[in-house]
Image (cartoon, rainbow, N blue to C red; front, side, top):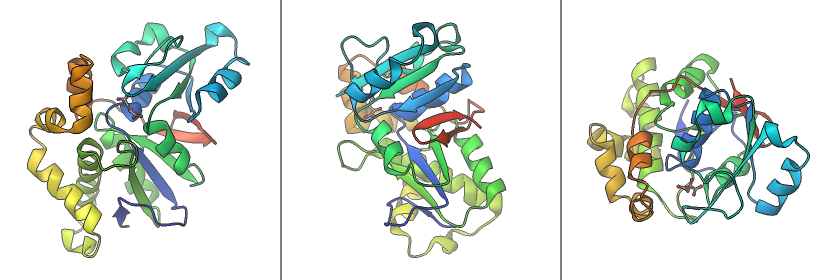
Length: 238
Ligand code: MLT
């Protein structure tokens, strides 16, 4: 079971979308706090049209572009705003710059998961129990570019799978992406917040005064929640 960082063209049996800062951290938080589901959109107009069909008391709209909240939406993309008082029993309709697009990119896989550092253990547990033939770990990055925070999370997931299945790192020989992701995680695992401070999107969020989001998202294994796609674009607690 070789985790890959970069997708090839065939849908894998299991696709793990990662946007640590902050979309998949927010998705995990909403489901852990009792949200009914999270429905993801790349397009804001489509989000508005679909969510209009839901009673206002059963829905929440979250929109982020460039790190900032979209005008007219109840929420931006801060996981800290997703309290259980607010999200309990409601569906979150969300569109973000990169994270929700990464989820859409892999939506044809039979097992689509949303992973962040905060719910890593639940995702790893799923992979170990399910034993999918192929696993992709898809980092969202920033507008097509590499990102440190998603790569370190991919490394955290792969590292934990290797550890728990007693596979030797040599099993990964030839998979340059996952070997470098694990190396990044090994170097920074005790200072993930420090890594976020160096990351380009971490710096963008700091400029937007989101220091607390960085702190929250840098925690590992604190939420036992598995966001898994139930129908195209709709994630629920697995
Ligand atoms: C994204 O989808 O690009 C991110 O989640 C941006 C953010 O930090 O809100």
